[in-house]
Image (cartoon, rainbow, N blue to C red):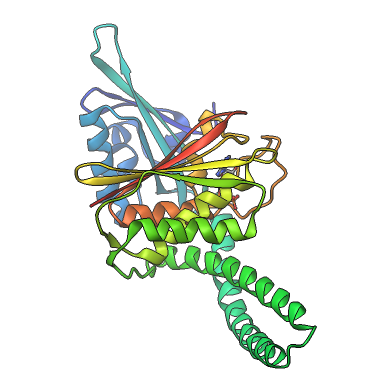
Length: 333
Ligand code: ADP
């Protein structure tokens, strides 16, 4: 009677059971359901990817976790579902069966889409007036500097605020670029240590409460998008500071291994609960109720993950709640 699709399958992935909720939803008989399962009512363009992912789970015994659209018989609508399945393993370590669920997440999905659309339009609309304002303030700064005018300090303050605004809008633009597959990368060899130094310096200029220590160095030139990787570092460093009030140190460690480099950013801050360690890299996810009152958009880490993944690297976090967090990323040389 639960309002959710549930099913089971054999060790090799043949379906053995579907609950009534699914049969009613899809408008098919148990016999039909057992033949093709949810693949019978999946959005046709998603069929290939879904059956491949299912086969992959059967082979590797990894937990299955995917999203796809299933056709509802009553109105012919394809609704988004979150699908989860796990292997049941006996004491001898053999898989005896699979059990799974599919939950209707259509409403959350459309809310997310509306949010994405709004962010995309708003960020594009904001970009032009900010650029214009920046240009005029720069002109003003230049003139006030020439006359050695006492009001120069105000123009400089305005200029810094515009920079902050620009940075924020840039992040929002990145979200929409990632979604439309339009995030461009400018890949060239560059000095990795210098990129790290630049990132540390730019964060240190704004924040005086923490000192950022860099341990180790990278001996080789790295090929990648320096500006984008700088953006990842700045994000990790600002987070490390933002989420560690009352402490005064952040440590960056650089290591070079045979065919890759590893970077970590460690703080002694609020930490992240274990169940959210992967989720914090999802768009708009923010950990609530960790005692932190820090505001944010919940998008920095999702952008960082996209950038690192596009460079062929990996990014992840380790944390002990209340003691601090360490963010790691690796990049192939
Ligand atoms: P934002 O900081 O704007 O919310 P991010 O995507 O950068 O967005 O981070 C997502 C979430 O991850 C944050 O809201 C916070 O809950 C958590 N987080 C990120 N970095 C840290 C850190 N160093 N320590 C504790 N929590 C962190």
